[in-house]
Length: 294
Image (cartoon, helix red, strand yellow):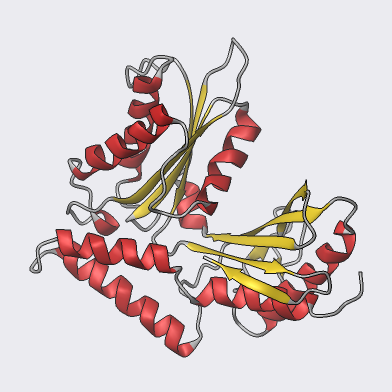
């Protein structure tokens, strides 16, 4: 792989993800604002969020000081040189850190030292999938630590919340996770939920669901109905933006299911804050931009 425009455009992907709230997320917050009373804390919080998003976009500054864990999802042609694009991506991450689009927030877990360029063990995170295509699709999620802290995994049956091994049990798990968060993780947020799998694949899949656009619904009818029901149920909890009360506790619910073993029935709930930093780009064979995603 010749260098071409790879590092330049991967850097631009990082910059856009850090400073510019995706249009579907911003539209979701605007819809939520219309549901809240103008004299309420919820209205003030949502209005402030939109103002901050506009300022970040205008001033080319990060949406949040916690620029989070960077996970890159690559769809590449068969036989593509993944080692080369990893090197270009790491160089782009280091450059984005030096220029202030990423905070120096990658920490060595043994020594407590900070990695100055955010390049460390499993940082950033790379996920590759070979596809029958000629172009390279790159999607990036930047997930902050506050939202990561409120993710939960359940093993059904869970008698503490009366959750059995069925979709009603799944519903109870999701509502319990949202209730326990109580606005932590910077609500209103989005939850990604994986039903089934093992402990590792459950979390992997639940986070990958954040690649979906907010307005869409699961292709599995039963899961699509559950997504819609959860959105109605959480309004009744009254948690609201930042836990200060109101109708808007979630901006979206994304649910998928994986196969599982007979002995295990996991429900994994990942949480994304309102600063839903997710972008993508389609790159040509030399790294040039074919089109931007989202």
